[in-house]
Structure formats: structure tokens, C-alpha cells
Length: 560
Image (cartoon, rainbow, N blue to C red; front, side, top):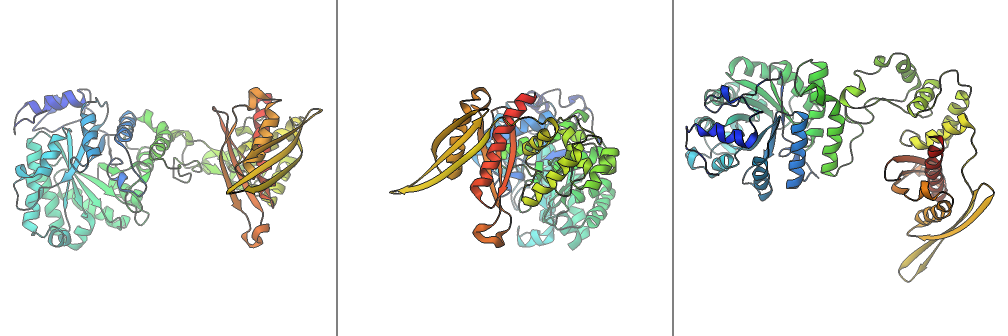
């Protein structure tokens, strides 16, 4: 698509065709200024697809970036920064595909820099690529810190402000909504406040729709961010945004301080992806803005889908979800100490700052040797058992949990084993099977190690004796027990697979005789469950976890 000449009135119409009339109210179009029909109190600007990919281990294909952008759009993110046009074939293709889609809530932004020194903006090929991306929003960064102006750009202060103003004015004339990222804003301000302010004012006077103050090094304290943002809000004649990094662990806090000081846009990434220790995490900012600051940002209906979105982003990035993340991690509303759980049982908000389901999370009660009666009651209820403080078996269950924890078991991540323990005490059912004996051997033939397991399983009055080989002793034992049990329970167990296996040495001072804990995750294609076993013998610990896995699947079916 050819670009219109400067000042042509067709620009809004072209972008409307590309990005959807329902997004932008073109009746308010003025010099290409794109105004949303209803402005939230705080705009959310997502840079996962650009800044997030600069994090170690983060790599998205074009298809990944499109899928993520579609989810961000459905969630109600206001701006999605797609990348740097022309920097690599992947970003070029992303913008080509993005231009063919209709976005319901989000505006796609192309990212680049101000014009180069000693060159006219219309002659700068990098600026031209920003326009050729055909996005309604263009975000450019420029220098605030005189150190960078003199030592990195190797130019003078006047030329730097001209580079900022020229580029913004040119992009505005081309009908773009322009966001100016003031790189090293806080370091530059602390070095020379008046010059830093002059660069931001130059951006505003040139027509920038927002000046985002960037803590590029991520080393500022919250008090500094608040004070400098307040000064910018008072003296810069456009909207102020904030872009923080988490190098000293206060990325989210700094963003919130800036919002308290008057900023109206916050830039960040989902799950805090980004260079070094990451960017400000939007999965923390969004609920804090909505639930703590009581300001509008994303649509209210989207908030309860935040956990789902966070997990989706990790899935696309091929990363294990961080269970300890605020708001969206599985431990965010998990309770372990007996006194805490007792209080939560009586008054939930006494130990919970917000309702877990507000962000799509849930309350979890953890079982350990720190547990009290309330832990057992709430955990059992969470797992679907009819139990209360008057249940006679409650004391026995609690005592058994403490004994097993002392032996090396841990039930926090093994809810299937916990459910089995409770079920056995409450329902007094006969076990679906018992392992009478087993034997594991290993022999080496040429360059191959062959493991063989023999197991005797009793179901009712029938004894089944089975042999199987495997890649290792645990694999062979798993195969032998599975082969034996499938004969009796084909429908229930045929699709059960071991999907994860973890081993932890509990006391390394014991050397090779140290006690071992084994976690196993299993799945039948529909549901997943985790079990645990512990013993000084790793084979025995693994067998105990395997037995719980098969037993849980059988007893769950019987119970239901």
C-alpha cells in the first residue's frame, strides 16, 4: 500500500479500514490524532512482543506474536507494541499480518527511534519503515540524559531536541498517534533536570500524544519516580506515561507511584518479561490499578481472566508458570500455617487482601506438619469431601499427615495423595489393589543398560504376576504395574500416562543413603493429578507415588 503525502485527508480512512472503525472515533480526528471513544483512567500499553522478547530465553515466532496480540486485544489492552519494523524479517511479517486484521480493542504500535543526527527526517530510512508498518500508533524513543547525547549519539543538546521534535512533528503530519518514550528519563533528570525537562517539552510541543518517562536502567527508587513524575505532569503540556524496569525489584511499585503522581499510561509486559531482571509486570499492575487504586483500565469483565491470560503467555513462551507471582501465581492465595487457615475459615479477608476469583485465581489450603484442624477441613472441602470440625476422623487425618510429613512426604504439590489419605479415613473403603511384592534388576549388554521389573499385584482374590522392561528401573516398574492393572481396569487405566517425574534428596548429608522424595504427575488425557512418595530407597519412593497415582484414578472413578 502506498503512503499518502503529508497532509492528505485519506490517512484516517486508510487506518480505519485496516484497524476497524469500532476502535477509533474518527469524528474527533484532528491532525491524525486518534482518540478512543471512551478513555479509561489509566491506559495499558503492552510491550511483551518487543521489550519482552529481549528477556533471556524468550523467543516468539510470527504466529506466536499474532496469537498473543489477539489475546491481548480480546482482554482489552489499549496498545500493543509489535516490534521494530525493518529490524528483522519476523517483525516485518508481523506488521504485514497485523495490518490485515481487525482489532476490536487494541491499537497496534510500531516502535523505533528519532531521526538520526544530521539528516532530514523525511530522508531517514528508519522513520520511513515506521510509516510503512501502517500502524495507527508509532512509538519512538529519544535521549533525555546528556551522557547519552554526548557519548552515545556524539551530538550536542540542541541537535538532540531537534531530532525529537522533527520526528514527532513529521509522524503527526502523516496521521499517526505518537507516543514518545523518554529513554533514561529519570537518570537524565537527576543529572540535569532542566535539560531533561526541555526534551520532554520539545516532544509535547511537537505534538506527542503521550510522553512516557522510562526508567531504562531500572535503578530508581519509588520516591524519586513520584517526585520527577509530578514535575513532568506539572510542566509538560501533554499526557504522561511511565515505563519501568525491575532491576532493583520495584518495577511495579515505581509504575504505581508514577500513576499516583499523575501519569495516565503505564507500559509493561505480561508476567514481567524483559531484559535483565525484566520489565514492570502488567499482571500485577492491572489488578492493582483496578482493585487497589479503584481506577478504570481494562474492561471489568476481563479482570477475572487475568490468571488465564498469564498462563497463556507462559505457554506460548514455553516457560513453566511462576507459582509465586503476585495475583496470578498458584500460591498467591495459598494458606499453610494452621492459625492462618483457622482465621481464613472464619473470615476469609482476614488473611487475603482481595477475593481470589476477582483475577481468576482460587484459594488453596496447603497441608504440612504446620497444619491444624482447619487446614484439614478446608482442604478436604476444597477436594470435594463432606467434612467439618465435628467429623470424628479429623484428628486421625491430621495426625497421619504430620507423621508422613515427618517421614519426608509433602502434600502441598501432591493433592491426589492428600485426597486418597482423606478418602481412606472417611470412607473406610477396601483398596482397589495391593502390591504384594516387586523385584527390579539391571544388566548391561554391550553399550545398552536393560532394566527389568517383576511385580505381583493382588486385585480381590486374584494375584497377577507381571514382568516388563524399561529405560530405567522406575520406567520398568511403571510398565510392569501398568500391564498388570490394565487387565483388571482397562477402561479406567488404559489412557493414564506419567507426564512428569521429579526427585528431591531431603538430607544430602546422608550421602547415597539419604531419604528421597518423588513427585509424579499423571494424566488420563482429560485431567491431571500429582502424587508423592518418600523413602531412603528411590525405587520404593517412586513405587509409592506410582501406586497413589493409579489408586487415585480408580478411587476417584468409584467415588464419583
